[in-house]
Amino acid sequence: MSERLPNKTALITGAGSGIGSAIAELFVREGASVALLDLDSDVTEALASRLQHQYKKRCVAVEADVTQPQQVQSAVQQAQQALGHIDILINCAGINVFRDPLALEEEEWQRCMATNLKGPYNLIRSVLPGMLARQYGNIVNVASVHGHRIIPGAFPYPVAKHGLIGLTRSLGVEYAAQGIRINSISPGLIMTPAAEAWLASCPDPQAERERQAALLPCKRIGEPSEVAYTALFLASDEARFINATDILIDGGRSQIYHE
Ligand code: NAP
Image (tube, rainbow, N blue to C red; front, side, top):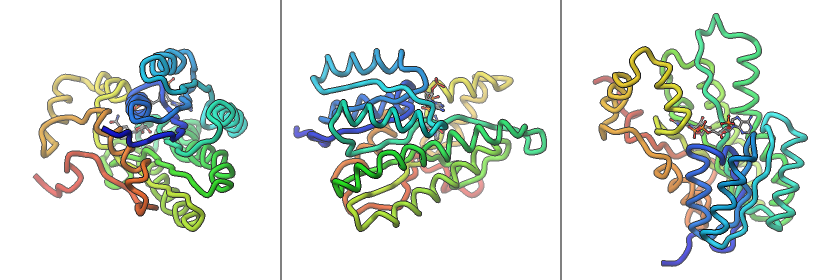
C-alpha cells in the first residue's frame, strides 16, 4: 500500500510519551521524516533512533520547553537543519492542571496557559516563516473534549483548551490563502501515561477506570493510536480542503446530554 505522508517532514511536540509518541511512530511508518521535541531528549533520542533504524527515515530528537520561545526557536532551527524544512507541525505537548478555582495558585494558572495555549503558539510562530516561504504547511493542535464541554473539577485546563481551539480557527483563517492549514483534534479519555497518572490520583483508581469506560457510548477508553490516525488524516494532503476546524475523537461521549 502507498504511504500517506510520502517525503513529508514533521515536527511533533510531546513526542516522548502517549499520544505524541503514537503520532511519531505512525507518521514515520507512513513515510515522513520527523523531529521529536520534548522536555527531555533522552526518551525521544531512543525513540528517534529506533524509528530511524526500523523505517529507514530521518528521525531526530530536539529538546525544548514549549513555554520558552527562545528554546522553541532554537529547536525548530535544529529540526529544519536536520530535515531541510518542516511540512507538518503537531502540537501535542500538554499538561493536566485540575484544581478548585479558588484554591488555584497564580503559578498553576500560568503553567497551564503557558504549556497548553502559549506553547502551541510559540511553535506555530517559529515554523510559520518557513511554511510561508514554501506556501505549504499543515498544523494540527491537540486540544481536548475539555475544549468543547465542561467536566466539573477540571479547571483551568478547559480554559486553555477552549483557547487552543480558538487559536486554531483564528490562525487557520489568517493563513489559508498562503497554503497553510491549521486544524485541531479533540480527544476524549485516552489511555496514556498522563491519563494513568490521573487515574492513580483518584481514591479508587480501578473503580474510576470502570466508571470512565461505562460513561462512553462505546464502553471502552480510547487508545493513542486512534488519535494518531486522526492526526495523520488531517496532516496528510487527503484533508487538503479541511482548515480552521476541529475533529472530536471521544467515542461519541460529548454528544450525550443526560443518561
Ligand atoms: P503525556 O503522556 O503526559 O505526554 C505529554 C508529553 O508532553 C510528555 O512527554 C511531556 O514531557 C511533554 N511535555 C509536557 N510539558 C512540556 C513542555 N513544557 N515542553 C515540552 N514538552 C512537554 O500526555 P498525553 O496524554 O499523551 O497528552 C498529549 C496531549 O493530548 C496533551 O496536549 C493533552 O492535553 C492532550 N489530551 C490528552 C487526553 C488523554 O486522555 N490522554 C485527552 C485529551 C487531550 P514530560 O513527560 O517530561 O513531562
